[in-house]
Length: 166
Image (spheres, one colour):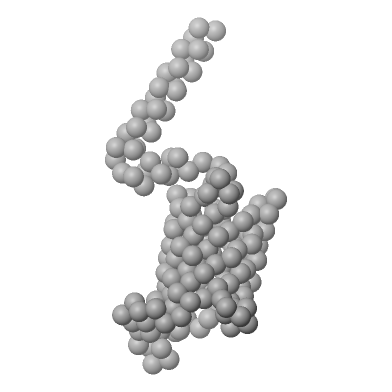
């Protein structure tokens, strides 16, 4: 029994040393170690049906299909079914809000004009909520459409429903 207790204490001390060493190496390493469930429940590939609307009137601007990949450690990638000549992939970060039990994500993507020239950037801030069972998700988001010099051209609002696909 004393041997088992000594082994447990040694393993606990060793795990503390590993976490301390990772923290000293880089902030991202320490964040990855501290990102434990329930935060990682969002990790995976999700398919969304998205509705973008006028923030003031609620009038629909566009509906489309999108896919988001949420990686362990807080990074994400997003794309949608728009022609690839009109936009690039979105890259971003996500965080878990323990107080509200939801996730927030921020992402940016580049837009292009029909002639292929740079049109500007979209910035999106999402609030995501998982349904019981962790295979369905709802989202609400706001965003800004920025011009080539990062000037604000328009504000956007939207919502979506997602299903875990992988």
